[in-house]
Length: 351
Image 1 (cartoon, rainbow, N blue to C red):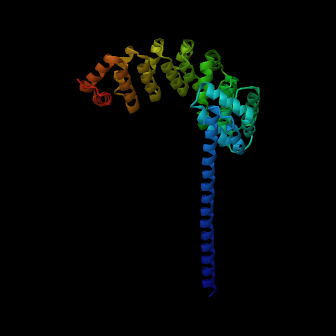
Image 2: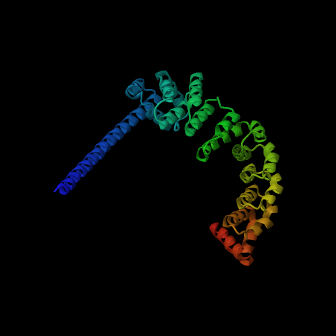
Image 3: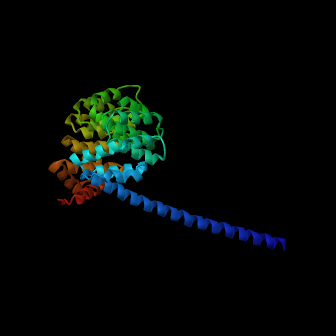
C-alpha cells in the first residue's frame, strides 16, 4: 500500500510542477508581449518626435521626456533616423537632442546595462562630436572587456575625429579569439586607408604579431598606395602561409601590374589556397602573361583552384575567353569540364 501511495504522491507532485511550469511560461510570454508592445509604442513616439523636431515643431522635444531614460531605445531610433537625413534637418535634430541632454544619457549608458545597449549608446555618440563625448568614449574604452564593445568604442572615436593609434588597435587585437579578431578587420582597414605609411611601418615591425601582419597585408593593398607594393611582394614569399595568402590578396586589391612576377610565382605554390588566391589576383590585375599558367591550373587536383583559374581566364578579355573555349573542346578531362562550366555561367558559347 505504501508503494501505491508513493506513486500517487509522486504523480501529484509532477503534475503540480508541470502546471506551475506552464503557468510560468504563459505569464512570461504575457510579460514579453507587453514589453514588446510598449517598446513599439515608445519607438514610434521617439521617431515621430525626431521627425517633428526636424520639421521645426517647437513642442516636439518635450514629448521625449517620458522616454528620455530609455537610452538603448533612444539610440536605436536615432541611428535609424539619422541615417536617412542630411543637411539642415540633421543638424537641427542633433542640436536639439544635445540641448536636451541625450548625449549625457548615452555617456552614462556606456558603463552600465547590457552589452547590446552599451554598443547602441556607443554608436549613437558618434553623432555628438566634442570633448565631452571623446572623454566618455575613452574612459569606457579603458574599462571595456568585450571585443565587440571595444571595437564599437574605437569606431566611434574615429567618427568624431579622435581615432586611436594603429599600434593601440593592433595591441588590442593581440590575445583576442579568432571570432573577435574578425571584428577588427574593418576598423584596421579604415585606419590604414587614412594613414598608409604608419601602417607600412607597423607591417615591417618585428614586434607586431603574425595575425596583425596578416590583417595589415590586405588592408595595405586596399589602401591603393603604391608604396606598399614591394613590402607586399616580399610578404607573398614569406614562410607563413596565412601571410602569403593575405599579401597576394592585398596585391590583387592594389591592382598594380608590377606584381606580375610575384603572382606568377604564387600560381606554382605548394599550398592550394595560395594558388587559388594567385589565380584570382591574376584576373583582377589583368595579367595576360599568366594565361598559360592559368590554363595549366585547370588541371589542378583541387577544384577551387581550377574554378578560380577559369574565372581569371574569363576576366582577361577575349584572349582569356578564347583559351577557355579551346580548352573546353580539346583540353584534358578536368580542363574541359571546368572551362565548359565557367563559359556556361557567363552565357558564352563554346567554339
